[in-house]
Length: 313
Image (cartoon, rainbow, N blue to C red; front, side, top):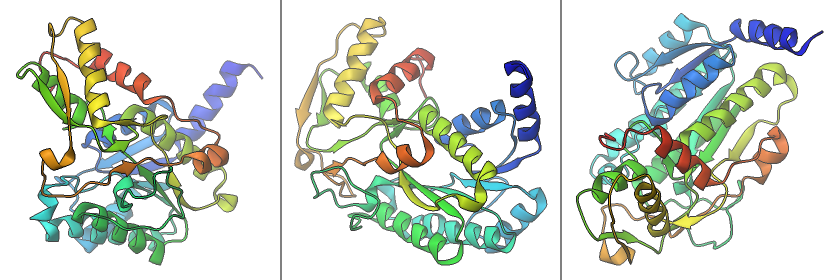
């Protein structure tokens, strides 16, 4: 059998697999759906205008109507600071909604992939966090995501929870697009330098989730279900991340020169407290699914090559 013939057969088999992606219009969902489709999967997207994840009846009806082979939940309330004043909404989406979707999957005997966050940890470890490390969220967003994880575990055995960190991409609001906008408006830029994490491009996470989906579909009976970490390789501070964005923008001629200066978190108070150390250990994901994260800088360069810098929003 030729390689081309083999690829066609794999694609044909994939087209018979139906995947439901909730939150498909968000930053991650808009990257994930086309990656899944390129692998030949039939993808149905459901976002807030079609599906209110906080309504249990809609979770059941959405799953029943599409009859997927796999559900990937990208729907989330991600406004970290706003969550402190909108606690009910944050928990309704991140905890209750995740639980409703898991119950619908359990009823239909479906596996589920759910996206979670590094903010379930308090940042006091100073070494990369493992999946089994003690959880202690510092803010409402992190707590609502943790309780969402627990809601899934309580009712659905066949689940994979993927914790990621510092997501950025071409779509939606994110740090990279904010720095690009501010670099044209301010000089200098002041950015906190005492928070450390692993920036993660949504394109890289989408490829990881697509690999994971393939493993679930082909190896469901023996798949090691549970919680995994996946983020960009290497860690940095928000300050160094911003400095890299600005330097790459200057190379591309998008602005002449913008200084980036470091400040402490205490100099830039926010409604929600952030962990000082948000570095995740991705070894378990790498060993289990044979996929190694790329350096975060490579993902950044990809985004800067794609993004319409003159009007990134």
